[in-house]
Amino acid sequence: MEKNIQDFIDLIKKKNPNEPEFIQAVEEVAEAVIPFIEENKQYQSDKLLERMAEPERVTMFRVPWTDDSGEVHVNRGYRIQMNSAIGPYKGGLRFHPSVNLSILKFLAFEQVFKNSLTTLPMGGGKGGADFNPKGKTDREVMRFCQSFMVELQRIIGSDTDIPAGDIGVGGREIGYLFGYYKKLRNEFTGILTGKGRSYGGSLIRPEATGYGNVYFAQNMLKTRGQDIKGKKVVISGSGNVAQFSAEKILQVGGIVITMSDSGGYIHDEQGIDEAKLAFIMDLKNNRRGRISEYVDTYSSATYHEGERPWSVKCDIALPCATQNELDGDEAKALVSNGCICISEGANMPCTPEAVEHFIHSKILFAPGKASNAGGVATSGLEMSQNSMRYSWTAEEVDSKLYSIMNDIHEACVTYGKDSDGFVDYVKGANIAGFVKVADAMLAQGIV
Image 1 (cartoon, rainbow, N blue to C red):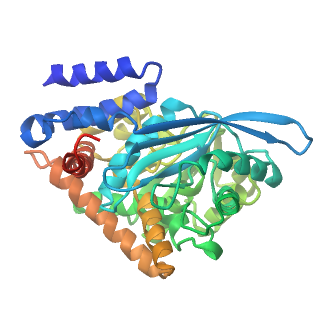
Image 2: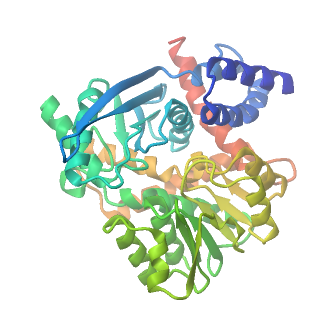
Image 3: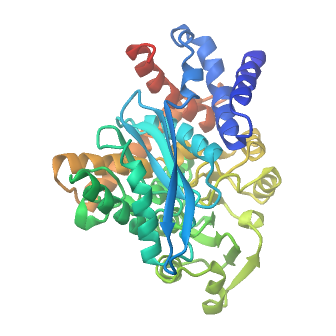
């Protein structure tokens, strides 16, 4: 078994040199899925996992744009169309200087399994550009988005590939992208999700990833007869996912004590209550400020420049910032400080060493492909509403989101429960995601 896994990983490394994030993502899946394949003959033909690890299509393109002073800039755009076995490609766009082929392939590969877990008919894809919207004016962002869409519109469509937002792509960027797609194609379709309410967006979509992350954590805690009420929660990040994870934690009675950004983290032992969270939301969403400004208003908090919050004593940790932000040493610190539950809000925020320590310690740990699937699930619900030309109420969407996260949790338990009763959610999520995609690929032949 170990040889089969290593042979597969060696093949992936040979075919994808200098792509560490992608190799890391495939390795995690392989370690869970290859033993399952060995035990289930129906999945041993047609090189299913090898095909899943190969994108169906990779598009890379030039994105020239002009800033407010008239200077021309050139960025690189991408769209990875990974797997369409169970539906049209679905996955976000990321605008960030760190964007490269490896990161987007890792995200697209993860998206295939995540979308499968939602039970909705969505394949997996991801895209973006090495453009940094921070510090840019609205007009500069608009010109970049329009140039980006000139190329992207050639390969997307409401029944082909439906992008959404991700890091650096919020409501402003989605609006500019949608507007230019509509102009170029002369059609008003549900081509993007995460749209504004005035032109086809869904209620609860901005909140969905964060809310879903907390719903999943609740389900994990229930397996041990516990809940979130009264527990101290450490959150990393201060963007969309972190904000709405914090909001839902407060709604269910938890105590949020940290948030962060790329500069450092704030620690407020008295708790970040509703008023303080509203301050953070205004700071990050409207004023585009830094989390360090929190301590200028709230003397109960301390700011830790250049550090991450994983040394803070807590009951629950929600990593909601970016990939590989929580390493093995930080995982050991969390466990030794009494943390009993980690639920990933970001995509692959925990390193392999961290994940290994959490599982070895037999604490509750949810991989992002399961716990942060609420965002894409609600994107799927937005697609349904667009197709019907109809909008559901916030309560209806939230109820559907809650049910989907419960179903994902149950699937993870089904495939991840060990003989001693411990649930390995990493194994469960990977196998459950694999099975639906593999069944569809087998039915459709070698394509």
